[in-house]
Figure 1 (cartoon, rainbow, N blue to C red):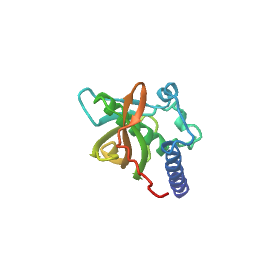
Figure 2 (figure 1 turned 60 degrees about the horizontal axis):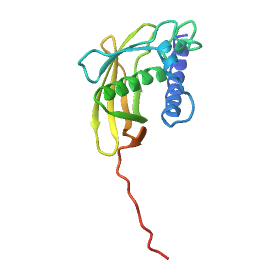
Figure 3 (figure 1 turned 60 degrees about the vertical axis):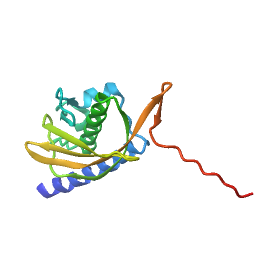
Figure 4 (figure 1 turned 30 degrees about the vertical axis):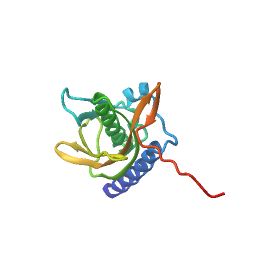
Length: 174
């Protein structure tokens, strides 16, 4: 049974990564703010930039159907917590960013209900695209790591716009 569970866990993780890809490419799977509060909780320490603690309670819908006899938090839930931590941290700094993708995500440990996750991230690059390296730890061991890609937005007359230079090309062929 152990090898069957292990194989199922790997399949669910891969499915979770594909599900996250659809989230960040703007396709489906949208959770409104009210629902998020019921799915998991994120705690930010005062004065600590780039860190947060996350937990998915045993009653969380994340666990429904995800191995009922042995509940494991889907990878997409962990990535949702990382995304929220980054957006919250940037908002505290007066910046607004939009997560546009993920890369090099690696899941190493399963997460059970009520496990406390320590989330840390840092901004690696600020050129045209922002890249946030992240690490999620569980009981002192790295549970998940990777990078999230983002772009900075500015607010102009109530509308969020990209903070990227516009380029124009002129076609002189007639």
